[in-house]
Length: 319
Ligand code: NDP
Ligand code: OXD
Image (cartoon, rainbow, N blue to C red; front, side, top):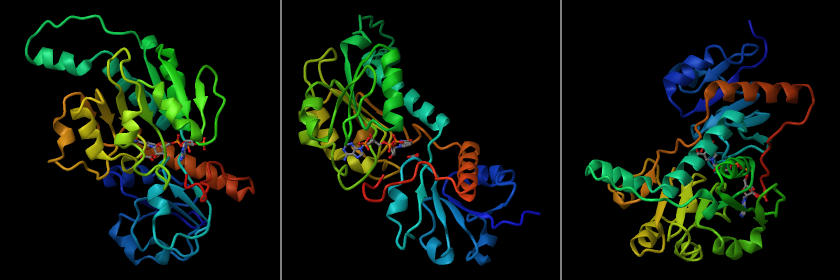
C-alpha cells in the first residue's frame, strides 16, 4: 500500500479516459480523482500535489496545503485565474508528444492554405477538374508569433517543408535558419508575413492582440494574394468579429482556428460558414494523459530529491 499522500487530479478531460488511465498511474502514492463523487467527502488537507485543468472553484479551500500545482496543459491562463491561487510553484506540461502534435497541426494548416485545399474541396463537391499550379512553400513567409517550445518546433518543421520562416517573441531570440524579431519589432515582422501563426500564451499583453489593425499590417500581394491568419495559442488573443470582417473585406484571404473566444464555438457563429476558414475544436495538441501523468511523476520525484522543478511558470509574465 502507498504510504505517501495521493496526488489530487482534477482534469476536465474525458472522464472515462482519466479514470481508466489513473488506475495505473502514480503507483507509489495513488491518486484522488476529483471527478469521482466519493472524492467530495474526502479530507484533502494532507494532499501535497494537484494536477489541474479547469478545476472545481473550491479546490484550494478543500486542499489548502498544496506544495506544487501541475497544469494539465501547456497553457496556464486558466489556472492563474482561479481565485485563492496559493503561492506555490506551478509547473506546466511540456512534452514531446504534445509538441509534435502541435507542429503537425501548424504544418498541415499552412499546407492547406498553400495548396488551396478549400478550393479543391469545392471542386470535388461539384465534380470539377480544377487543375492549377500552386505556389511553392519557398515563395511564402510564415511568421510565427511566440518562439517558445511550440513555436520553435513548428518553425523547424515548416522549414523542412521549404517555407521561409520568421519569428516574433517578447525577448528577441536566436534561432537557426530563421529571422527573428523582438517585442517592439512587431510591425516590421508583420509587414514581411504572408501566413501568421499564433502560438502565444494568453496574458494581459496578448489579450485582443489579433484585431483589425493587426491584420491590416500583414503583407498583401504575396504568393497567395492575401495573408492568412492561423491561431492555436488562445482564443481570447483574437477578436473574432475582426477576423470575420477582415475576411469579408478582403484584408485576409483565410484563417485556421483551433481556439476561440468562447469554447465550444457557438453553433450560430459566422466563422462556421466562412469560405477558406478551417475550424478545429481546440485539439491541435491535446494533452495525452499517460504522458501527462509520467511528466507529473518525474517532476514530483525531482522535487522530493531536492532538485529544481522544470517548466515552472513565471507569475510576473503570466506564462
Ligand atoms: P512557451 O512559454 O514555451 O512560449 C511562449 C512564447 O510566447 C515565448 O517565446 C514568449 O516570449 C512569447 N510571448 C509571450 N508573451 C509575449 C508577448 N507579450 N509578446 C511577444 N511574445 C510573447 O509556451 P509554449 O510554446 O509551450 O505554448 C504556447 C501556448 O500555446 C500556450 O501558452 C497555450 O496557450 C497554447 N497551446 C495550445 C494548445 C492547443 O491545443 N491549441 C496546446 C498547447 C498549448 P519569450 O521567449 O520572450 O518568453
Ligand atoms: C494546452 C491546451 O494549453 O491544450 O495544453 O490548450
